[in-house]
Amino acid sequence: MSVPSIPFLDLVTPHVELEQELTAVFQQALRTAGFIGGPMVENFEKEFAAFCQTERAVAVSSGTDALRFALIAAGVKPGDVAVTVPNTFIATTEAISQAGALPEFVDIDERTYNMDPQKLRQYLEMQCSVSGDGKLVSKRSHRPVTAIVPVHLYGQMADMDPILELAEQYRLIVIEDACQAHGAEYLSRKHNRWFKAGSMGRAAAFSFYPGKNLGACGEGGAVTTNDARIADAVKMLRDHGQAKKYYHDVEGYNGRLDAIQTGILSVKLKHLPEWNAKRRERAEEYKRLFAASEGGVQAPFEPSWSRAVYHLYVVRTADREGMMTYLKNVGIGTGIHYPIPLHLQRAYVSLGYKKGSFPVTERVSESIVSLPMFPQLAREQQTRVAESVAEFLSVQAAPATESVSIG
Ligand SMILES: *Cc1c(COP(=O)(O)O)cnc(C)c1O
Image (tube, rainbow, N blue to C red; front, top):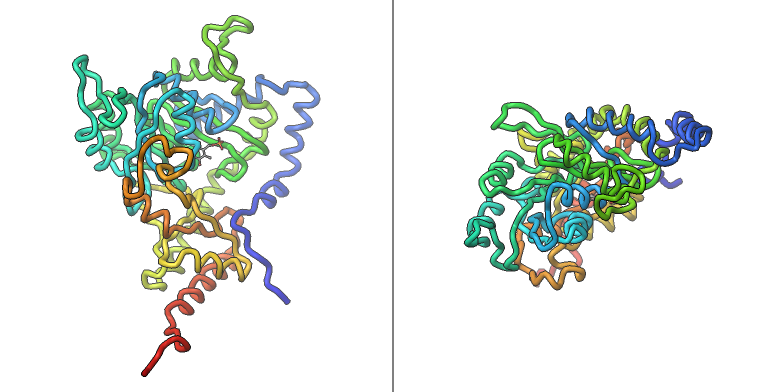
């Protein structure tokens, strides 16, 4: 008798649990034929803005579009440089390029895996110069640097206080990539209060790709902001640059989100606080279980200023490939987020970075592994993951008697 396998992610259970409410959304849309725009979209936008503690939210067709529209609406121009990290999903830099800008990188913090504010400072101070007309110019590309895109990776916010302070000092636009961080929180020491992901920059991008903490039954995304002009500009960009039908102020895109998806997201948003709380509980439990592994597995670091929502549960271990193979053989799913840092991807050869350009990201990418993490992950399943990891570590640590020569 074989033991049941443990998936990396279970997307079926939450949808089966909510099937009646979700199909009711579809029925409602059928009966009104309100597929594009309308009250379901507007209601979801209000609810999501309230959830993120922002004035506005604008629903768009994906997280990538959300980031592209946010950058354009906030004033990033073709030819500008936007600074981000190489430890992220490629959509971050795709959106920068699609806005006409050039991505440049700064390295991450080895404990949080997010943008290192010190490295950002060094970049701004040493790798940029101020031109005659007072513009900050990148020495590598000779282009004006106008934006910073911190990524709240794995569900934990980047250290925003120092990033925002540098942005203010250098007059840079901050657009948060919050695509993995719906509901994550950050304690600002400057303001002495907690902020939700998506509420700290000039604007932020969220993704509702099915596997995200809040996922549609298809593609989806949103821009959040406290700036009404940015929200209105994003509304125009998602709808062919029109504020009024067939009156086009600018060229835009077809980047709207279907009414059915927003209705589905409204149903799921009610459960998000409880799902995020469960992810946090699972993370606590993993931490407890791995505390015994004596450094064999390095659990995620959550600083006192962070309340992470664990979109992914990423650990580090010396023999990552060995651990993944071992877990696969006992029926446990894992992943790597991400195996190749962006600056070493073939798509970015033209940027001119090389191995060694961002040593922390490179080191991290070679030892990270993402373990099963989703709200419905059962305690027994989790215990089995931890036991299997411990088994792997003990097998690995045992002396390889057969190959040892004792003369
Ligand atoms: C998912 C994701 C995106 C893009 O979202 P899509 O909805 O897939 O376009 C952008 N950035 C990060 C960090 C992501 O994880």
